[in-house]
Amino acid sequence: MFTASMIVSEALDCSSFTIEDSSSYASEGQGTFVSRSLTITNYLGETIDANGVVTSSPSPIVFDFANYPTNTITIPSLKDCAYSIKLTLLSSSPQVGSVYSIQTSYSLVCRINNFAYSILQNIAANPKILNDKNLYDSLNQLYVELDNVAQGVKYSDLTSAQSAIDRANALSYFQLKKF
Image (cartoon, rainbow, N blue to C red; front, side, top):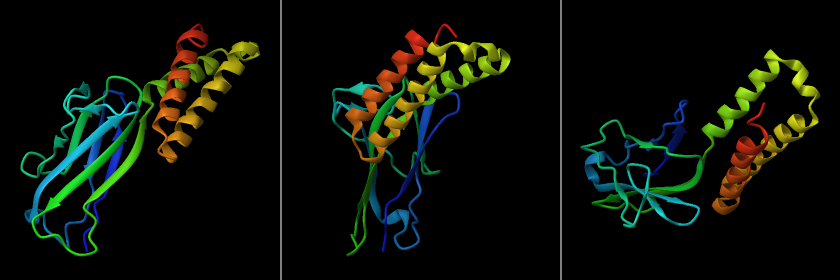
């Protein structure tokens, strides 16, 4: 019995995210599949193309075995965002009980995390800034928003996850940038 699976990870430099088809092809070899594709949508339901930008075409990304022999594809990441990612495989001879698609929610929050880390580095270099109540309150709120992102993704609520990302970005830009 075949079960589709995937792993999504974000690059440490925030420039991209990688989707790996981690399915085991022991029960059905790759040669039995007619196609493999990815559909990536943002919180508005807009389709994202292989270049990481919103496209007017709702067509999935062709993720064929010939062009992606390592079963991984890297998508440029232009900003922190919440996505729904669906991997779909089309079998030439579908087997009863096999699962040929998988969908997951994922959030890109590398830029927010890097900004938070830079604040922690500033605190380590100058512990006196912790006496600033605005810094402490704003940093605490930033971590609350990151937790809100995780909760939105956990429950596949991309709108809530994206709202939390937007609030975290606003905190980063307007309240914490001075530190």
